[in-house]
Image (cartoon, helix red, strand yellow):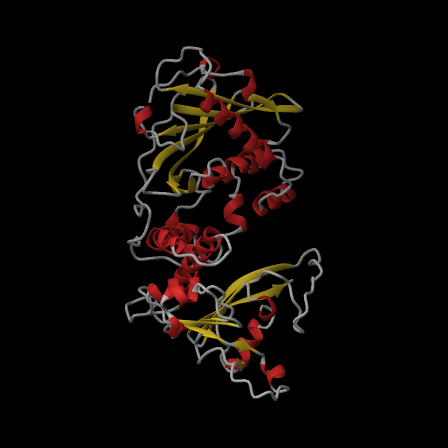
Length: 464
């Protein structure tokens, strides 16, 4: 690709350069974060799928699946863009006084694939003789018409980290339009986009959070001026989340569920609350559960209908949502072929329009230690949450949240039921609202997949 080799001749405005006193490590760390998470720059995007990285720092979807133990034999049919074949990177342009260090190819995934198309983009990272670093973004597009709405209508964008005036450093943006540069200021929308890109980068760069890989290298090489830490940054996003399920699997399933159910459920909403919040939230939780069950059970690939899934794993026997509220989550899972039911202390108006009365029960769950003390003859109070193997969903279950693992153990002492707890308001076992003290330094909360007697158990554990 032939571009102007002298960056000083690229389109530029003084507003696109700001002082930013950070290290090159931090600059590369934020660059990696934004490479995987373009949604931080544009609300029209879900994520970026890494297709290749010459430095093997950012991981492809297949590599993330292997890390999480979720490797799929072939792309799922509901993927937004299921191709994992790396597009050939655009050859690195020659830049004056710069040497190529690394090349990344990514695919930008839009939130609404029916409205926007995905876009492949090549990113080249250079170092210059004056110790500055250049990150060059090149969309795989031949003209403005091929560029989606969420991407600036330009053929190249450069982030320049300049430490030529140390100890002070700066960050600047330069760009090339598809047409020959004229020196004229950019259109208003493009100008606002560049200012927003700068603002986002600055905000992330000033964040005190650093990837563990960076911290470890900084400690190990504090006295080593020849450390390779500057050239081998880790992915901040990959280090801190998406350790149970790869994000792309859940988001692809969410997109499919959203297209199938969102409009219908919102149009039939009868509660006084805002429908979109509840519908989209439950669609995402359903997507997570579906992908989680695919990884846990041998027959959960198509709603637990006996089709092949994870070999050697237990079979999916059903679910119970112990505080199902409006019943939307139960409805989605039932429609997707997963058998189960929901319980709640009171019936909701939404139940009347869902048409799944056999799967929604008005019932109070009283943990056995309390139930043993009651003698009111009530038929709507029970400590039963399901048969052996039933998966417990505890979504915003309030008073039942701290009891969820206990209910799972009481229901099947020899093999506690698997569960997923999504807390909301904090409660004590007594049912009273209680704010637990923050964790001491050095302690973390992890969610793990525990494999017991051939079945996956999902639980929250404390670990020092």
